[in-house]
Every structure is written in structure tokens, then in C-alpha cells.
Length: 83
Length: 156
Image (tube, rainbow over all chains, first blue to last red; front, top):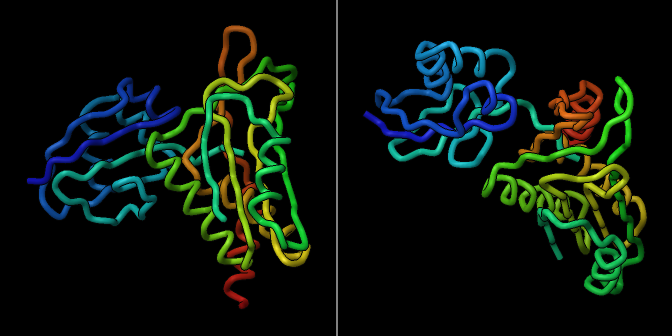
């Protein structure tokens, strides 16, 4: 099992109701599978993670099929709107 | 010279520009862009904005953008400074300064840095009106603006 921390930002954080959540997930899990697991946990996560979500692994934006490793910092957030 | 910072405090545009000049002596061209908070959106007047960031990642992404912009356009210097937290109407929210031997590279570098920033740096804006704050949606025009650079890179 891999233990990761999942962080949420902006609208995703507000809808999730928490800033971050610890998660134990099977080895070789991908970011997309983490999204699915969380979406099945409760309605808040399901709503937060619906729609267009940008995914980051250890503070770098990555694709949904990227695999995670033990100790990773994962983040889900909406498309950015700086500038 | 590469500079990339975020700050809660108001930007001192004059000082930033002076620093860019000082640190890129010999450059033939310098372009400075300032983006400010508009006092309205499509629904009417707003009272200001608030910018959320991802501590750690936002700084890294901004620095990576400044460095890649310098390399891509062979600039003498690229500096990007972005506000976070609450920003009042009409206050500067972002400043980009580029210095290069010739104007084309400096102009292109500044334009590219802003187009890429709006797609790759984790910052999220919400607008305040009365007691309500509304998250700003990403714009298709911003996506398109960045895509033209990707096309031009593939052409090279």
C-alpha cells in the first residue's frame, strides 16, 4: 500500500470541505484512480472532483495516468486563473 | 538574470523596473508589463479580488516559467512578480519584465510569460462583490493564446 496526502485548492477545496486528506491506496495506483476512490467516499468529494480537474504529483502538474508512490503529495485543483 | 516571486504586499512597479535595468545593463530592449485589477466583471462592479496559491508549488512553477522564458527567447533577464491574497481594485496584480538584445525577443518573452502563466502557475482568483466572493472561471481565449506558442515551438 502507498500512503499519500491529497491536497485540494480553490473551488475544489471548498466543495471537498477539507484542505487535505491522508489516503492509503494500492501500489501502482494512478492519480485518476485516487480521484475515483475519493469520489466514491462521499458526496462532497464526488462534487469537488467532478468536471475539469488539474492534477499535480509532488508539486508538478502531471497526467491522470501518472502512477503514485509512497509518501507522495497529490493535489487536485481547478484550471488556474492567475495573471 | 531570472527573478520569480509572489508577495502579499503591493507591488512597487518603479522599483521593479529600476532593478531590471540595473541587473541587465547592456540589453538593448526592455519590456515591462503590468496587469491590474479591473473594478468590474461581466455582471457589474466588483470591490476587489483575492488570489489563492499553492504554497511551494506556485513559487516553483513561477521560477520554472521565468527560467524557461529566458531560455526560449535568449533573454538577458526575465522577472515575474505576482500578488497573492487580497488585492484592491486598480492595484497591480502581476508584473513581468524582460530584457534582451533586441525588442522582438523582449516583447515576445513578455507575451509568452503572461500567456503561459495563465495556464501553468497555480493561482486562483475570486472576485468580491458585497459579501459574496465568486471564483473566476478559466477562459477559452487564454487557452488559445497559449496554444499559439506551442504551435510555434513545433514549427521551429
